[in-house]
Amino acid sequence: AHSQDVKVIAYDRPIPDSPADFYVSFDNEGIGYAIAQSLVEKLKADGVADGAGVLQINGSPTDAAAGLIRDGIDRALDESAYVTLSEFDTPDWAPPKAQEWTAGQITRFGGDIKGIVAANDGTGGGAIAALKAAGVAPLPPVTGNDATIAALQLIIAGDQYNTISKPSEIVAEAAAKVAKTLMDGGTPEATSTLYDTPSQLFVPAVVTQENIKAEIFDKGIQTPEEVCTGEYAEPCKTMGITQ
Image (tube, rainbow, N blue to C red):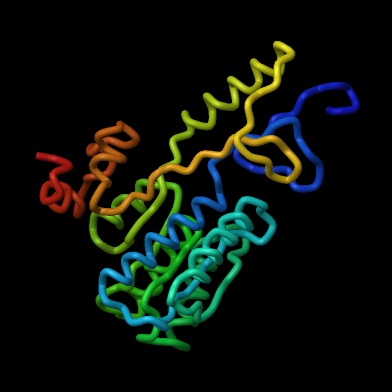
């Protein structure tokens, strides 16, 4: 594209090996840091002793965004008083792989697992499935990222601790504005640089039971009709999401 004088905007995923003209995305390292720091604060609030152990489930090793999320998680855990018992790069972000690995770690570490930092909702869901299959109760807090309907339901049920809501409208609008500026011959305003590429990176709010109504339902990201179904109907009422 560059050989033909065509501008390239990297959207949602960076291009590590060759600088684009601009990169627009959520701040994946910031997201990794946010979900892990949220977990650390939860463990502190619950009185979990310094030196206790957590598991770390990363995304696909072939995904540049997964590497950035991992770096953010690493930074938060390194700054904390807690220890990473074991770490796993999940091939293709596949939840069954995360579930299989977590099952092995439960056998290995048992009750020493006080929390699990999972890089997205799929891997977090796999970890929760492994915990439930092993009869672990109560469940340790498990993180996520993407605010999928399944993850929101797990948060409402109390099985998943957090996630990150990433409305596509935020980065889509920003990318469109960057494209218009470039087409008009202007220079888009960058707030940072990543992989030698001027960038705009957004860090959305961490979602837990405490703010799920405000962040997800009051903002119209999802509707109660989509999420508060079946076994989740009653918890939604209790949390004030539905009447």
